[in-house]
Image (tube, rainbow, N blue to C red):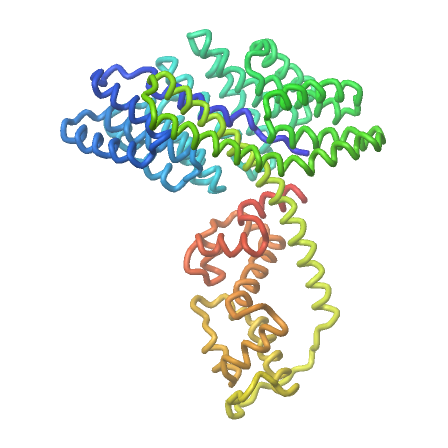
Length: 524
């Protein structure tokens, strides 16, 4: 089981907590408005966004550039925590461009990091890396603690990229080291410790993936010594990773001790997403020790957990509604509103992180199922392939009176489709039913009957499946195709856009093109 760089998920949370920490050029009245609207975004987002957009318009006229930038940042951060990547990127880009134009390097770096993280979630790693590198360029010579924090965060984001090179593990470890190095230079002790825990966590996972178990244990022990039990999430994950390392090295007694410590923390704090990974470790442990009773217990726990997660999310939604109603009835202090918002942000981030982990596991399962089914279909096709060459002649077009076809007509249409497939004509952009019916000298009704009976549910599904199977074969057998951009793959298979191609690819294979290539590389 491959642990992700989950410690990086705290980066966004900590960025948000620093949003208004240092604002030297903003008048107090505008700072108060920004803080008020940021708080309102948690409970009344539409109204708050309307106020922020009005504030942006006002401050643009008055050339209060930093206020404008920060207003865009509030909106971008809100959409990011809500999982609305497109809107988050739109507003973060506006903030980044203004920051770069007027020389606010730290703000530009922070927004480039946010954009990069959103592209990572969208599995658009090239754009993610481009934005993160731009952010690094902004603060590569940090002049203060804010710069050092953002630089460390940006390198932490890089650890989350799916590097395609053979030395990807070493590269991620190098990013984790740079991130930690930047955090360790933070002057203020509280912030240095808070961020260095992220750094040591990522370093530990990097060493773990590189097979350097002793170094990984050292990194997790450093995290634990700094944390001293203050952050349950950090402690729990450090214990779980130490247990997983001992599991890999067949030290089952030590593995059980640390996994049990993690379990106690996760259950006490209701970290359901982390419990899921923990249960997978327990299952592996009890498979190794042949403890059938415990194995059955944790397999049952794992099956029940998804239902628990759904209930937890529902309860969270109910509580948020109650909070909103309560706020309508009484005026609460700004401090209380901020506390509610911050708690909501933590919940949202935990849900996002759990969703990402669940998504990766489901993608792997979908990838394996698709490849197994595809191999079975290819074998079946090869065993039952009819090599008889039937000539397509220019007979009069059949006018169907009903849906009953003669065997001769059905066979002729199948042979025509076989030729169509061999010539890869399905990759022609804009291919339509009328073109094939004209070529086969038939009509749309008869063609649809044959396609539905022998090929797919409908013409569109038939064409899309042929196209995706074609490009999958290229990706698997021609290594150069793994380096091509999605737009090139879309163009070759006749899709109107990279978006359309990616959507159909995922519908058919269960994973995105980039994930398929990544999983294929890991399998090989």
